[in-house]
Length: 571
Ligand code: DQQ
Image (cartoon, rainbow, N blue to C red; front, side, top):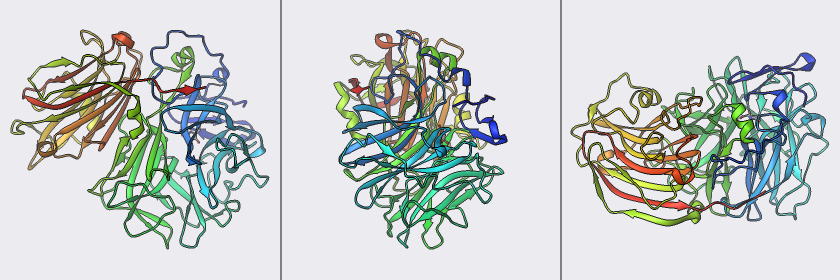
């Protein structure tokens, strides 16, 4: 792909040939796209059990599905370098979502309507168990169009080859659709009339839109007169996802299933902030419109799948285990030059099972149970009191590659500090009150990827405040001391956690994997991913601690930790 490049942080605007203005949400460095990988041997940041290819750039997970008992994951990939560009759909399969086999690239530019890149999209299982993929292509004018790809050979359970029917593209940016903001088709679902529906992410004048199309045969698509949903001042909606959740059970639902006990979720990836935001609401099947519930905020300031690094995510319904599974892309916190030196950029989060919380007000996420197959050498602590200022090391684990769960109980909440009404932004609050800022009830939690002497540490912790008659729990991931290096994105992340600290206690699970700390607070009510690059706390020199930097005692009621084996990834 010959791009003329105007790279800048955040949204990337390209003025390409034919006078068409095209935007992509990644920095583009044309001179670096086919940069030779280095032969870097010092690779302390490659992960042991997170998904990543052998080398090069990856971003969005695409088209996850299960077919003939095999899980398929496609992903945005640059075969020629560690920066975004030359995008194709790479492909891997697994029988357990933990160990993976990489295959040949599944979809690459080969027809007019994808000659400038094969961007994100989704898979749908059509009747007769036939998978179909809709994805965005860049056409010769660099307009974004939607294409269809079908398996060449349905008896190949690995679905290694994909063909593109001559009818492509199946949707084009006409009648007022912005040709540079028209991408990322969802998994399709069936409406009351038996027709397929799909939404495409878009924007007009910073109004985010989920453009709705309908089809009888999955080939001829007709745009509906109105979007499924739209919202002002959000900017571009990338990678939308629209699915049902059960109101009274944790089981997942087929995307096309309708019924009385379901709510709907619309997730959009906001290009401007790189946040995956979602609302819970109702889908009016007759009007074909989605309406978020009262209080479910759709302007980018509401709920997020993850309050750290996690973007362009996608769910799919795992019919073999009746669950809905979420995948997300995690980018780097270092520079492009660092990525070129490493020879790679981007990993995927551990797939998460996801369901509606019993309050009906938010989703709950939890790492897929299969990840436990990598656990070994369990370490269990008896209930221990953590005195103010205490820091205790969790010994006998490989702290650079570990799964750890703790439960903290507070004997009394009397001493909780008062919540200031101006503290509305949890991320800001966490950065003002980092792990080293003493409080009353908190900070307490884990120090991950820490060096001996604690010069380096990634702190994941809680603080409890009193707000009139209720208690507010803040969960933070503080990266400010994660590395001796200064030239990194060390943003501190935070979220408010909707739990009752007195009766439920405060639970925290962290999946730690060399350069990633993936944390789940309150049994999955708030999730925060951090990417960190310690210089001292690598491999055997990494340590894990529990700490209490508040002035009150905290009960560590439970600590269980497991060293994690490496996942088997065949390239
Ligand atoms: N990444 C893809 C786009 C999508 C963006 C291009 C989100 O289709 O909008 O690689 O990260």
